[in-house]
Image 1 (cartoon, one colour):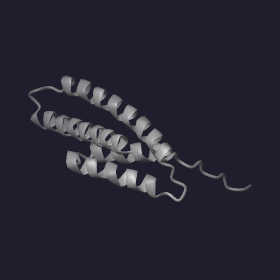
Image 2: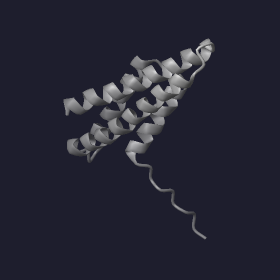
Image 3: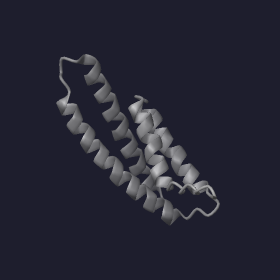
Image 4: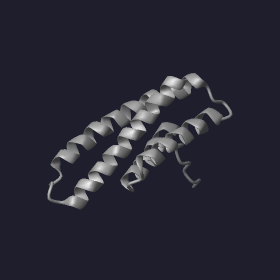
Length: 111
């Protein structure tokens, strides 16, 4: 029996996983913003890159990140204020998501 071929992951999904993994690790907001720039550069550097397609990806990425920011804001509200480490981690994660969302917005506006 032939081995099953793995379905190719969409570039948008790969970017989301990449950014979510970084945010979960507590990566600083400025580094998250730079990662967005790297991702956009990779998308634009693809052999068959079409700026209109990249803009569509950025629109979808922004929508996903905006939703993630709303979810993170809600999660921050549930953190026990007496748990300093949890408050700090929630704040760092939220700041990273906000920086990522804002970087995507800037990239969208630049195209």
